[in-house]
Amino acid sequence: MADAPVADTSVAAALARAVATDHARVMAAVIATVVDWQVAEDAVQDACERALTAWAREGVPANPAGWLVTTARRRGIDLLRRAGGRRATLQRYGVAVERGLLEPAGPGEAEDPDERVGDDRLRLVLTCAHSVLPLGSRVALTLRTVLGWTPDEIARAFLVSEAAVAKRLVRARAALASSGLPYRVPGPAELPERVDGVLAVVYLVFTEGYADPASRGALAPEAVRLARLVRDLLDPARPERLEASGLLALLLAQHARHGARVGPDGGTVPLDRQDRSLWDRAALAEAEGLVADVLQHAAHSRRPVGRYTLQAAIALEHDRPSTAQETDWVRIARLHELLNRLDDVPAQRIAWAVAVGRAEGPERGLAVLDGVRRGERLHLLHAARGDLLEAAGRCDEAAAAYARAAELAPGEVEGRVLRARSEGLARGPVTAGPGAA
Image 1 (tube, helix red, strand yellow):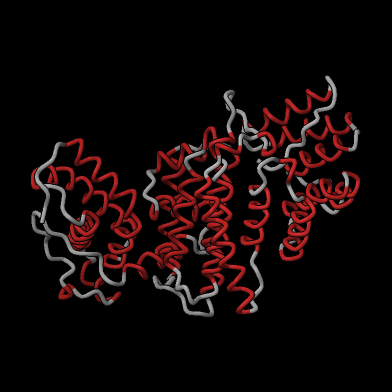
Image 2: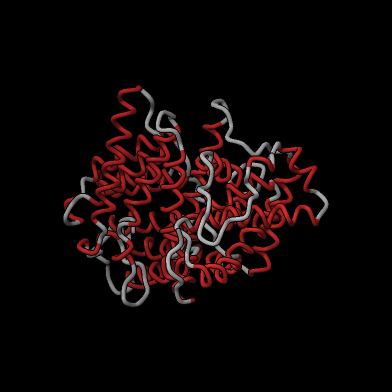
């Protein structure tokens, strides 16, 4: 039964809440019906526009998401009919009109998205992040289709033009249509690789926002929301859920610091200088619980712990002490060593080198860092080298390393911080090490 009619501003707010909370649910259900991704997107957009008028006139329905699903499905079928593809599309994918999916919603009623909604959303997420698409397209399609971001919002987050984002989305949908990729949850043999691809996309979205909180900060909380959605959609009995839990824990442990990471000047505040009273303790507690659960399940099933869980454990080691001086660098270095055995890539070795430098001295850290090729154009490599050289008292070399890191930094804020450290060494050594922010 519908509520009493409400003002337009309240209707807009109700619609915004429904889209923010249930966009993936609505899109997944509509795509499952009409198959064509562009048609589904157009239909959902049309349903949202109709909601503003219908809800203002008749009241916000008890189930806004269900109303949007019903209305968008009807609109999608109408669009397919006009394009002459309704019968062929429905027959090809086995969607029966007789199921009642296309009946109009009454003024105050709306169906619940069907019982398959979990599977619908999971296959939507898995398809958006499929390796048939380039990585940039996976990210854009996930933000647009799963989280409901507009092309303009995606463009602003990644500092590209809206036209470029629109073209990327068009190409992604066309690639999916021509690939013949089955729109389904893959079987047990294929699922681990597909889930790993999804987690990689989620992590990339988060790191883009985390690296530049001033201009891309909106990406980080959305990645946390997406990580939670992916974890919740996976069967608790599946081993893939453990690593999804590890990723969620990692993002929570890092995003918990967001209130202390940006200073008054807009610069990033290093971890060891942050006001820890500003950290989100509830998020940290949730991350602790997730890691504990993963470790318990891994020990019970004798499964190896994944890289995201190890990274989460490292982040929590940084977060637990009340002061930076109490950080257990020996344990952190050990965790980094385990992670490097699992995933020996430059970024991991760099972090391991910094931890070894804190635990065993800067020269030992520099020795680990020598395992990374000098020619790598990674700003973190040069920043870490500068940190270790500074700790070893080799200030001229450290200043040069920081300057090089600033040149390669992906964001203006981080580049400014690194330049300040380089210039600061000309006035004398800086006593505080950087740590991870």
